[in-house]
Structures are given as structure tokens and as C-alpha cells.
Image (cartoon, rainbow, N blue to C red; front, top):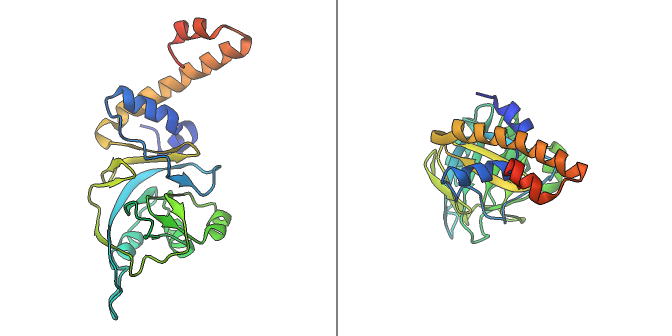
Length: 217
């Protein structure tokens, strides 16, 4: 089995998505609103999940970040916090300080369907952040993590702790651990076929002929 770093260097979301489709898992790509802060960065790691609930108050004396802090402090190298925030646009759980802490623990990046902020600083850090938008809001009084390391749904994709999360400029896909070896093997084979297809097309071969020969488009 390839290492996470090898997979990050060799794979891409479009090919992984195609192979997930072929394996009968057609809902593993997150919705198009999930975008990277830096198009040049690639994310590949193991999911650590956090489930947010909407709140409308910030009681005095309460620590609204308790479970979020616990998850970040427990991150291991190659892991990826994946936050399910919903689609209200009220919850912005991520910023410069959490990026700094996660990177120091070897995290491979972060994914959320909520908002992120401190964008300029995060881009300078070159830390992969994939989010449903950008906004200045603090999550305090708007959202609270109610569970960590549980199955969640993020932007239409089911994520289970330990699943392989892969993100690049085309978006984010989640590969369930149960079919990971099958999907990765298929993806690497498809990339080899795409290279041969590209070379044939660059030579001027007709698209119909190349497709008939390689079956890849």
C-alpha cells in the first residue's frame, strides 16, 4: 500500500471520483462549494471528524470550543480534521491559530462545509484548507462541536473516521476505508491509461480511435 505522501503526489480527485463511481459509490465527492484556499495545494490524509450543531447563545463561563480543542490536540501526523457544519453560513470554525496548531501536529490539512477566516495568514502558511466559504464570523454563539470521531455528512459526502480524504483544485473526495485498496489500485491503473491516451491524442490520433483503443475519456 502506498504511503499518504505517495498518494498525494500521484493521485487526483477526478480519477478517484471516476473509480469510486465504477465501484458503485457515486456520492463520495463533496459539493462544488467546497473550495481550497490555495489552488496549488493537495490534501491527502485520514479523517478525524467533528459534528457541529447550531446554537444561538454563548453562555457566560462556558467553553464553546471544548471538543474542538480536544480533537485538534489529539491529531496525529497525516490526519485531517473534517467538520460537518451544515449550510447555514453561520459557522466559521477555522482560522490561523487552529491551522498553526494542526500543522504543528503534522495534520495533512482540514476540510469543512462551514466557513474559514484569516485567509491571508493561512495562505502564507501553505496549509491545505478546504471550506464552504470565507467569512469573518467566530463560531462562538453560532455553532458548537457536539461530537467528535463519529460518522458525519459534509457537503453531501459521508465521512467516517479513518476514511481517506483527498482534495485538490477540482474539489474533495472521500474514499471509504473498506474499498480503499480497490479504488487506489484502479486509480493508479487509470492514470497509466490516461497517460497513454494523452500521448496518442497529442500525436494527432482521432479521439474516436483513441477511445476505442483505451476506453478512457
